[in-house]
Amino acid sequence: MNNIIRPLFTSFIFLTLVTGVGYPLLVTAIGQKFFPYQANGSLIERQGKVIGSQLIGQSFTEPQYFWGRLSATSPTPYNSGLSGGSNLGPLNPALLQNAQARLDALHAADPGNQAAVPIDLVTSSASGLDPEISLAAVEYQLKRVANSRHLSEARLRALVNAQVQHPWLGFVGETRVNVLTLNLALDAMIHP
Image (spheres, rainbow, N blue to C red):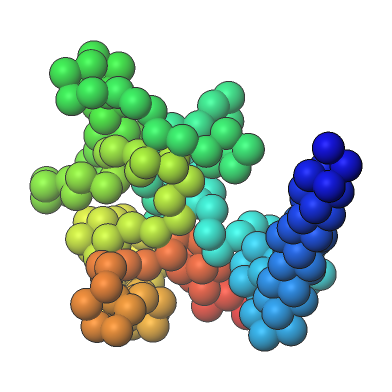
């Protein structure tokens, strides 16, 4: 019996040390050495204070800012501890109410805008934390933000073009814009 237990126990201890201690320490060390920004959460700092992460959306509802996707997290929007989709099906009245509430807010912020509202401005992502929007969503909001900031649309469009993230390798993913970094660049342009 002892001949069977000793090798099992030794293998258990060895594999625990390798996979439970050694491997995580090695991966953490590599991440900190070669990718410290990403390994620490892609945090964005201003004046020594963390104001957000490039990976997690934030709620913007003022007309002078670009708005991101809806968040499905509760009790507060973009709660990273409760990431997840709304799980509301296409016929669920709550999904339609959420979309209608966002449509109403968008129309109230820019009553003259008669363009079709891009879908990513009225729906949440699967995580509820999506930090990016499509170029169509940016274009839909461009005139409102330009008017609120007293900027020309051409100047604002140039700022947006500088913030565009293209698909990885030219075909993986979609062309998109990070809402937080775009709004921070907008604030920096106005108040350098």
